[in-house]
Length: 170
Image (cartoon, rainbow, N blue to C red; front, top):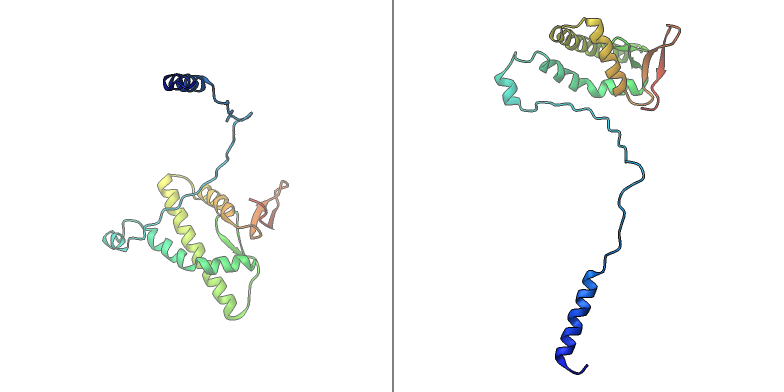
């Protein structure tokens, strides 16, 4: 094989033979399809103060939402302390009342939150043409789902009685 032409022919034959070889087959499929369960909630807020100033009465819940957002930390602190819980009527209930200024602040904050929630629920009932009781029970389910583990929620037992229990799991 000293002939350069012969080397070229051999090289071409080797390349053709190697190109004809099949690559190993890699199976990427799974025995069963992969299942993904996604639960998602989307809250949309308008942080554009200029647009809110241009439309002052267009959305009656905008000031309610602002007030609720401003007291959100206090409400969460009360929930974490198990002073309040999410009721079956979509409102917050005081579970352990305090005395003095602390108790006054607790009652004032809870009453303001419940007033704002009721305003939102009345608007939703009017808009959706549903009864207030239906909206309240829907909101109660929503708020109880949003509650963190360990927060008090009001549930109805199978025998029809009502109990306050710490939320567990999801």
